[in-house]
Image (tube, rainbow, N blue to C red; front, side):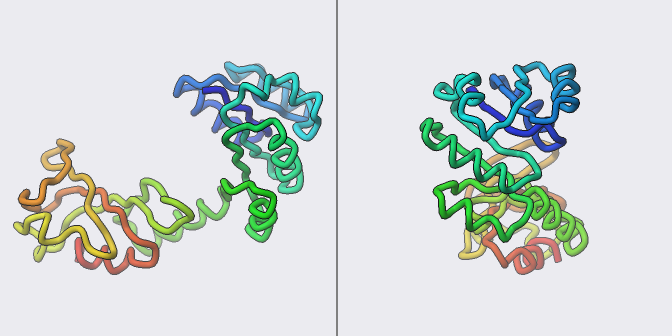
Length: 216
């Protein structure tokens, strides 16, 4: 996999390192010369100093071979312009960071559907820690329509029941479990143990309801 990242700030650098660790080839574009030099010294990837909204510079990245272009700067306008420009190169996956949620619609109007706001994601995670400290979010699905959560069975009414008596429902489905530290895909007739940790796909807006069923 070959990915081009625009932006060498904290988000872009962290993303680049994660992708490199997964075996991806990375080119990172950064317009600030000082930051560019710092990133180049720390990152095992090609780092180009320049403006990602420049067509000639994009040509230097072999963008026609890219599987992903990811705009991660803190400037929504620069991210939007670069994504529009990259579309003509037929990159299959274009992803943009958006700092201001009000700008998300502008990205979608020009065909950039994969838009992520780290600030909003962080706020949601913090809110969850406050309201449901025993629940961990593993990932968000679709456009935020559902989440995969990790919960611990502490509701005595659930203990001893078979998984098929509890899941699936219209609000959630249990997709995996840990018993005695061992991962398993629960079968319909398997019984639920107290303290068992489970991964649950939860429909948006029903987390409190599901938490009450499994934990209270």
